[in-house]
Image 1 (cartoon, one colour):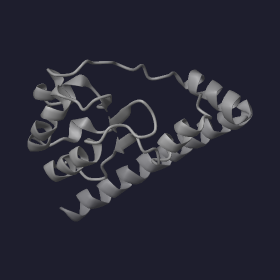
Image 2 (cartoon, rainbow, N blue to C red):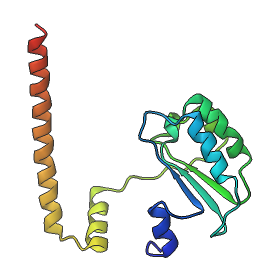
Image 3 (tube, helix red, strand yellow):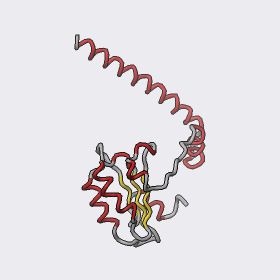
Image 4 (cartoon, rainbow, N blue to C red):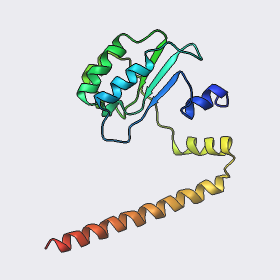
Length: 157
């Protein structure tokens, strides 16, 4: 399934019926939501459904969430919304009360490793090496941050 042309084009952001909303900023603003509403108002053109994935629904400003409410309450024909957030409580109550909730489980390290081995043919030994390298990098980063804080504290005296 992951190798079909529609899956690949959706993942790459080029599928006509799949809209993936990401934000690089701190919040999703009302202007972005209004622009989105114009883009998704049409019926699906390639497949049978239009899918809107909002990766950072927890970053909606209150005014943007209110603008989004009508689309969620009365979605266009054959339109599905997927609003993603770290936790349910991160989403504004007005949105939470009008949506169905689905909690996804985070895979274990072993499950992720097995996918990398099976799908990407990465040798298990490399994964072990990468795990150790990440540990070393994290320790070095923590030490660097401590030293930086120490230097900052010393200059404040």
